[in-house]
Amino acid sequence: MADKKNNKRNNRNNQDDDFNPKFRKMRKKVCALCNDKNFVLDYKNAEQLKKFINEKGKILPRRATGACAKHQREITLAVKRARHIAFIPYAQD
Image: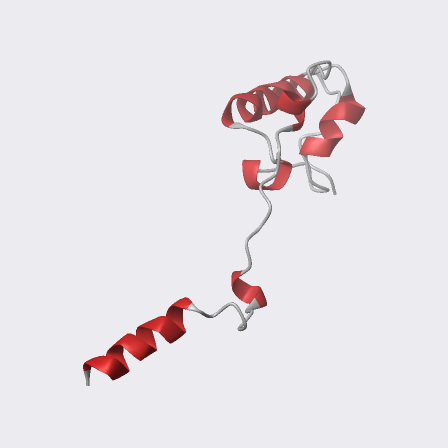
């Protein structure tokens, strides 16, 4: 009886042959602002900010942009400033 339990445990741990694409590891995104030290986020540069907003004008989340928490806050602030002075629209049609 104990041999059967140990055998089942060993089979569970050795499942390298069974690849399930649903549970594959995702590659961690690297923050573009941390990676490139010369990259300066500016609210006056609308083309630069369009990378961080979707087609409806919403700010993309960290999991989509790959930005770290510090730079995601800077992105949010820059987008809100650009919206306020009408460099980018609040919403797209």
